Image (cartoon, rainbow, N blue to C red; front, side, top):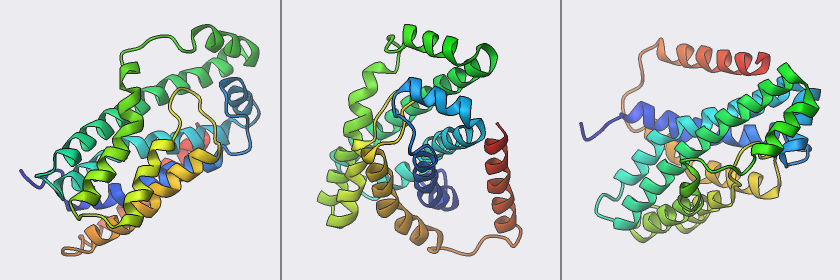
Length: 227
């Protein structure tokens, strides 16, 4: 199964995941980027913030097939291999953070804004099993981009754009600052064109696949907005 998870999974991942990440950070732009402000923003606009954090979490979870696709482009490169492993570990860490953020938002609903802020202030920064992966989360994109560039898989511009993903802040209830926009826009520049090429590299899907994917995407957006 050297082609696991397959062209369509990889192409959709490379094309859609960066867009979801960018949408997630843009939806919460304009609110204070530290956790008290993020919780206050949820109290004021729960639909918007749920959609924002839902898009970001979905983008992180969806990105792993694309990372595998990039790593397979240079199977003999140790830089690419280690960079891919680091990026995947970082994605696991970000999904964990997304789960904690979701719980924090539920505290606002159940207990109110001030108690939720106090609870997060009391536990913020507590050690967890994914904390040692912080360096991998940040540096993995740089290592992967350097390896792909050195192997001749990526040009200078997409490699630099991919490396910019290292600027994306990590942690629970992170708002949107300039670095978040630059990092996620860089992922779009580096990965979306490649994802389109992957999708076009083989036979077209069955006639029912496109409306099914569109319906699933629309359903995810509606569920996120109502959450």
